[in-house]
Structures are given as C-alpha cells and as structure tokens.
Length: 320
Ligand SMILES: [Zn+2]
Image (cartoon, rainbow, N blue to C red; front, side, top):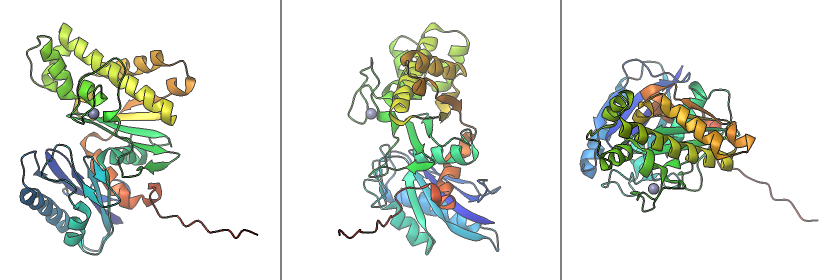
C-alpha cells in the first residue's frame, strides 16, 4: 500500500490526513487546525506545521509515502507554487509548496485549487465515477468548483480553471467580493442567501436556520432557496454549454439546505436551454461528505495521470 499526505487549506481551517491508494482516509489520521481571516503569517505557518507533523507521525511503519497533495482556496498560482486565498489576507503570493517541501523533505508536493480536488475526489471514488466530463462544486460559505474534461483534470494557465463561483448569472447584479457583480457566489452561497432573506425581513442568521425555516414553509426562506437554486441552475447550464459536461456533483454545507435545492437546479437547467447537450447534465449530491477535499488532494499525487500541466515534449520536424 502507498499513502499520501493530503492537506486542505481553507478560510477557517487546515485539514490534513493520510489517504491510501484506494482513496480511503487512514482511520485516525485526520487533523485540523484553525486559520481565519485575522491570523498572521506566523500563526498560519504554526497551524500548518502542526498539521504536517501530526499527519506524518501517523504514517504506518513500512508503508511508502508517495508525496503530498495540497488543495487550497483560491486564487492559487500552481506554476509558482504560491497561494493568495481570498479569505486569508495574510497570505498574498505565499510560497505554500516551498514551505511544505521544506518540512517534508524529498517527496513530491503538488498544489491545486480546492475546487479541482473536489472534482478529482468525486471522479475517483465519489458520485461521478464512470463519467469523464465532470464538474465538482462546493456550495458553502463561498462557491467553488473544478473541472475534469475527457478524463483530465483541467488547471488552466495559473491553476484557477473551474472557479465557477465567479461566473456571472443573468438577471442578478449583486456585488461580489471579487470586484464583479452578479457572480453566482454573491447570489447563492449560504451567507448570500441568508443576507438576501434578511433584507426581505427574515430574522434568522445562519444557513441552518434558513433550512429550518424552509421546512416550516416560511415564505421568505422558500423564496431565498428558490433564488439560490435558480442562480445555481443557470450557472451550471452555462458551464455545461461551455464544457459539454456529463455530470455535476455538489457538496458543501449550504447544498444540504433542502433536497429541493437539487430539484430547483435541475428544473432551471431544463427550462434554460433547448439544447440536449445542456439538458442532459446530471446534477447529483456529493457522495463524499467532508472527506472529499482531502481525498481529492491525495489524488494529486496518487492519480497523477489525471493531471494536466505535465511537460510534453513535441519533437521538432525537419522541413524538407
Ligand atoms: Zn465574484
């Protein structure tokens, strides 16, 4: 058996674990430390180092450590190995790959956007197994995503491909933290939906409370969920028109607000386009609960054939 160190770095926490070559977390290997928007560089490094040290201690005697995969909140720069997570202002162009390499020593370290890790995990052992044109999505505090097309993970020029949270949805002009307006994250994330409901007079404060109010039939909560589902459906329809997707798997806390969210998304896609190649896209709940980001981070080193950005040498042809 080979194992990989998996790290998931987000706006509120770092998760780490050991994952085996069958895509399973090793029992007892999961570690968590806080990050947070007000944390200093030193505090973030201390959390990261503590996670790495504890995870490495768990490598079973005699097992082969194949490397470390890192999923990180965006934006990232996978060419330079640096990260600038939007919700962690202390880290701007932070050399995350170099730091982890300095701790782990001579093993491969691969960094990708956390959304791509979700897509890899669902494709490997989750809800989208058997499909080669996949988008993985997280609908939570923010909205992220990643793409696998023709069986290959798509990174793009800098590693930020598939960042669906910041595509613009028609009919909305809500301002977004990225500087744009009408981004699906600014409409359909948990906090965005709660803020919209509160602006209409609803008095709750969290996505969980919105879920309870929806189940009770609260008119504003129902409208907020329908609004989020419409925006998500339009965004997925656009992503499918661009990428000819087979399937989208959605995880994240706010995706559990109600199972009806998926019905609204599917109905929106069907009413949005007459194209069969758009209407065909399946929209499924994640099959991986909270383990998806770590399994996908491990896939970066345990499933390297899925990654693009590998150097390809094209032989020069002699002109006769
Ligand atoms: Zn945006």
